[in-house]
Image (tube, rainbow, N blue to C red; front, side, top):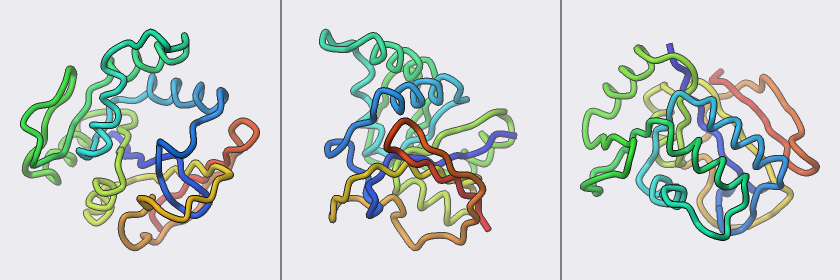
Length: 176
């Protein structure tokens, strides 16, 4: 049975914003390995549109960027959206019956399925489908933006903490 994991980079005050801070080289390596090991990813529309950046190689990319892009392109993606009419390579659009589709994925697949996007995570949290929350705190205070928890924080139990690189702290929680 697959585990649904919701994890994102966030500021100390709880906001996610990919334009405001970037991962260190050590954290980027962590994300490469994480994505490489995933069974797949479930995306909300906004996060999927941001991640489509990795669909095409760019001349300014480093070797690590190319490595991340290759891992991202390889994995299956399930995109939850009622407004999108199509999705890119190796992606499946989920317009309806989100709960049934996600439950089916969890039941028939093994490994970890990443959940990407606070709004999708909130919906899946409300359905009791998220198995683990991974919060990657950066030493930045934004004071605004999209919160990691799009709704009330669910009851959680801390199971692990670790330092990744020099300045990112990962907290891992499971539903209490």
